[in-house]
Image (cartoon, rainbow, N blue to C red; front, top):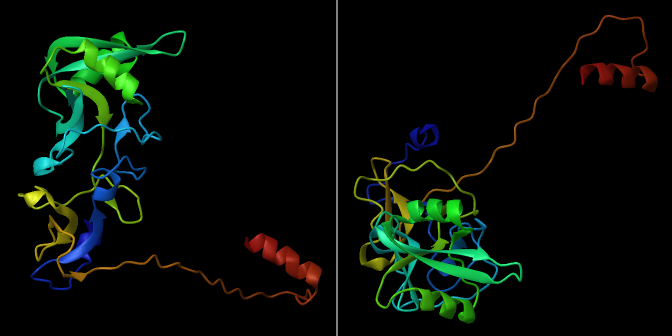
Length: 236
């Protein structure tokens, strides 16, 4: 809030700030940015580009869909707080994944906790063969959580922050294309279409320097390099 309180420039139609949810890192592929899809078991963005989305997913509908389920062999993004069946996995001594369907309705995080207690984690799928094996364990037409998820919104330098100052109606991803953030006249944040022209706010980090001046009373010759080095060492 200290940073926000320093922004005194009036901008009635909003001004772009550096927060965004880059669709290239989650909507059109498996990216490696901080807001890309990642697997629960490793907590990192996936290095394997396998994906099998049920079109038009992923949508990030209403800015709430950040967890992934599987339905009839295809993936979809959904609100993590919805109650779904879920699939866990464990790894055999031959390094083969074994999938287990849990016929209990839970939120994504609750299913994750169960899988981590009784198995390895929520199901992780790295290729077509594994997706087929997982699909075989799930009854037809049953929506089931898997271990893919993401954390939306990062700064344009790829850093993250827990601080958000959203307007009460944002984010909502209206029309499915609001992936950039503008600050309104009340200094609250709204997600908006990145292609709209707005004024914008830049920042820079100012490096501070300190100068120390000394007054000395001494009979020593301060121009002597050895004496000068000793004085400098004491100052440091």
